[in-house]
Image (cartoon, rainbow, N blue to C red; front, top):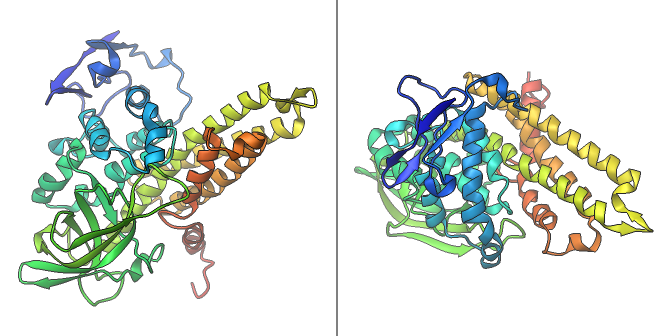
Length: 439
């Protein structure tokens, strides 16, 4: 047995690894916070054959990370979800700081900026575990903070930008949002209208962004804007934009049918001045950088719905087993238990597709095709699964008192956000060579 001691870092206990290994090996995790472990050290059996892992992607290290996150979810988030859903917002700064202290917001980010320096499969493990939160809005907001606003910054940003924006985002000291979609440009990212015009050493930004997750509470935005009048795929840049600058107006918090606890903002820019040095990477490469971010966002989104889909199936089994109609449990009807078996099979097929994509991605492969397939399948499956399961709850399924109805509302977004189903189909067709006009 290997005993791994915890270390105190900035007032919190975080995951650390032996200096003798560059990457974590099975069993060598350090559990992060005394509040969530109740122990000064954690022991794991380092014999890999001692534990059977039902996954072709995860090791003991992934599972230990998930277990630690689960403790945080159970204590700091799930007891308050109903309250935050009713309020239409959760306390992002407080929750992100808790997660930041635990290292959850920078799993695959560089260690010199507070990250854990792990590969992307650990982000997927986190996304799956966040699916145990009893709503969709909070996991989505966390994903924006940890994955969707910072990947380009982490890869291509200057050290100055990383110190100013990446490090405090990883630590949970700053809330981040992503400014891409606009009123007339959602899935068609190339057609955005927001402009950043160079004037001396600054950009002057005018325009607006729509559907901005975390936008009401954000301290900074990863903004995609047109920085020249060139071709639409080569005239855009990603800019780190502090949200306290003059001329930035949060016009409204958007009322949505689902994802209630996640604040979603419409934001306008009126002659906002920001230094040109705030551009991430090269000017004009923003579209390319954002497309790279989208691939990870899509895989993250798929991973995040795997757990609630399994939970909805299990809760439906439990409910239909005890709910009787015509003197027998609803579950005894063949149409019910056969349908649940079909849905369970579909979830596991989706999981296999995702894990294949992630494994290839970690090895440095382009997984645009597989990620698009997984995103398309996930968006359609969550609708099918939530609708089928809700039906078996009868009248209770049409209330706000059960998780299946919340999942029914929240999950509808997956076929729209991060590229609609139709965009995923177009990408897949492009790889198949079947788009009209494609040679």
